[in-house]
Amino acid sequence: MLSKIKEMTPEEFVSFVGEIFPDLKRIVVGYDFAFGKNRAGSLNDLKRLFDGEVFVVPEVKMGGISIHSRVIDRLLRDGNLIMANKMLGRNYQIDGFQIKGQGLGSREFVPTINLKIKNYTLPRDGVYATFTRVGEERFKSITFLGHRSTTDGSFAVETHILDRAIKSEDNQRLFVEFVSDIRTNRKFESFGELKAQIDLDIKRAKEIMGEK
Image (cartoon, rainbow, N blue to C red; front, side, top):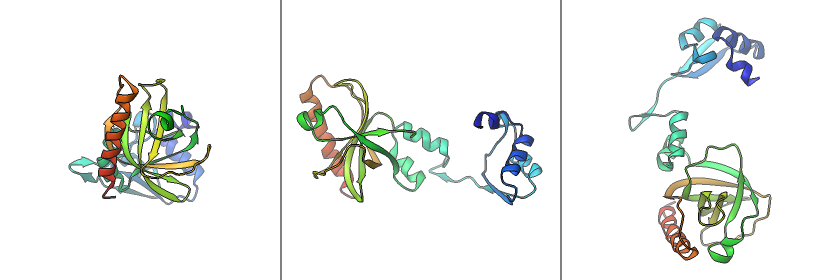
């Protein structure tokens, strides 16, 4: 269906929308809305082709930057969670189900909850100050996402609850809110070097989350 819609002319698209929503009276779109194949249809085309009201949401800026989904997407991919969250008006959140990890966290570093994530734009690989919700409880946490360059090289999303030992179960659904970036991902020469960095990351996360 989506591939069919992408090939429609502006006229075909408006006709198609009318067939699906025969009682449609108002369409709300953004100031830079375009539609139809190759974005050929403009706002004026929409107003001409649609019999009802077309309400255009005006451009909104923050710090001289337009608040737009593609801008937020770029900020997330760049790891700029503070600005992305300001534009969203909330902390960016993902959810996933707990899976078994390597088991190295509890033995060599700090205990972590490993998550299987689907269908999300993820921030760039790195370490972040976060909140993690387990069941009905919300905890301050630190979250790593990216390839485990120092160990097996596999991609992982894993979160460590700060100053709390909690029980969680495989396949349990968890939610992670990103507050601020701490550092980008990198490879360490030894487990000892990685452990020392994790301790620094946790210290930094506590400083960031102390006011939350």
